Image (cartoon, rainbow, N blue to C red):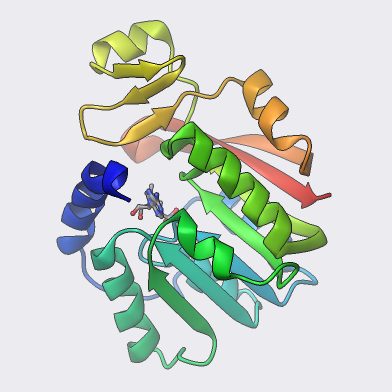
Length: 221
Ligand SMILES: C[S@@+](CC[C@H](N)C(=O)[O-])C[C@H]1O[C@@H](n2cnc3c(N)ncnc32)[C@H](O)[C@@H]1O
């Protein structure tokens, strides 16, 4: 966990300045709402690793899921999610806990029907990312659905401009202190294809931040 001290500091600072919000509110990016609709269809439970303040978890609930479980390493993020749970009487429908990848080992196999991995898989140390894939494969039932969102592939020119520090091949520490495993499409396929089938993928534009994310609809093998 010590390796994630800078990550924790970064996200605790962000979420420390944030307030509770209305969890029923539709997410502005339509493709994300659609992705959640796909995820919750015929699915009763969802696990969200790196859930932040719970935005996707709560939207999944209001779109029809019966139970959600979120894990995040930032205590301040979990505090906000917990405040929302209390404020909106969601105590029987959602649990969130503070912690890292180790928390997934305590979750029973085949105990969830779907999972969310939003901007987390490529922000861990590569060995933890591989472990995350294996844990999600184990925890989600066969044929269950996983919605995965990743950062864009960052080119050499951009990496120079952003002052990334290279730790190992295609693995960087950003100026913010966050890790980035800069995954090409080929590398992503290599690491996920033993466990998941890619049913669909699309680009998501965040106009406010001038950034494009990659989103994948995955089916558990
Ligand atoms: C970009 S935010 C995404 C939040 C949320 N998934 C969403 O889409 O709204 C990344 C989140 O991952 C969490 N995170 C980063 N490293 C983590 C780790 N090693 N274990 C658990 N959570 C982690 C951060 O605290 C942060 O809340």
